[in-house]
Picture (cartoon, rainbow, N blue to C red):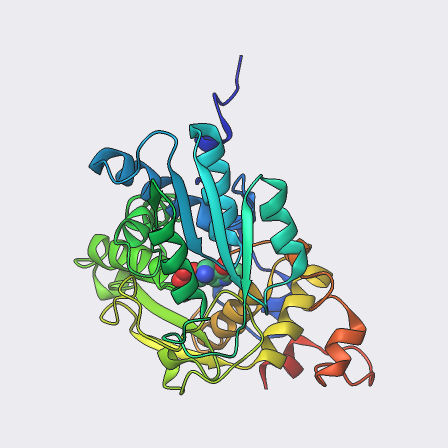
Length: 339
Ligand code: PMP
């Protein structure tokens, strides 16, 4: 019989799929491959760090049987933590900023977790910020452990051990560029560090060392912004998290909300990939990079989650109209999006 002992054993080993129409419309000759992380059992890339952080905390004794996991999370890390915690008998309390889609919070509750909602528009050191509130709950709950995904080095480590090697293996060592957004920075730092190390000695004729490119919401500090708000969820920052290693990305490309959301819709309509806004953002950056590359280049872009959690936002015409993201002047092409 061929089966997994538990959903936890299904984390990782996500597939690569070639982008067809959107790459062609962008005038790209290189191969652009999407690593589709919604194939993880919790539906996002965050299952990887959840598993690694929990296992490490059990090993170090920080998380004891019957303990409570408390974390500020925009949803996806919560799902990953909740499903691993459930299999292992831990309780979960999650703190979410109020810009997070209600559908996402409902998913957390469905897994049996408690959700506490905080305002998005306060500074990180404000007592009502989601960082401060989660600290307070951790201090007040006996047996509580905070994974602290923004600073926990097991986050990037999980990508160094799984995401990076999977990309290298599945491209037969031919990947030349890796593009990903950064929230905590774990994905780009861990995956990027692995891909750089493993390709460090590769000859220039074979593509040289893999180049690592960050995709970032316009306004976020990773691309030189002030931390001003933007609507794409899960990526960008207004402070420097310890999970982000700024020495890894060779370049960071800023993408605005309108471009990110238009591309997100194109991916569903033209590639059959119903993904979230941070995926659209990463693809905009990947196609910008790929446009200037020769045919033998292989660009891998990571798509963090599914579009199911954004039906009332990115995939809702009234919501998109209210921000001026669609004008009703007919369908946009990939060429329009990239200008
Ligand atoms: N996209 C989404 C939808 C996310 O939830 C996250 C995690 N915050 C990311 C991208 C970024 O991943 P990382 O934290 O590894 O930088």
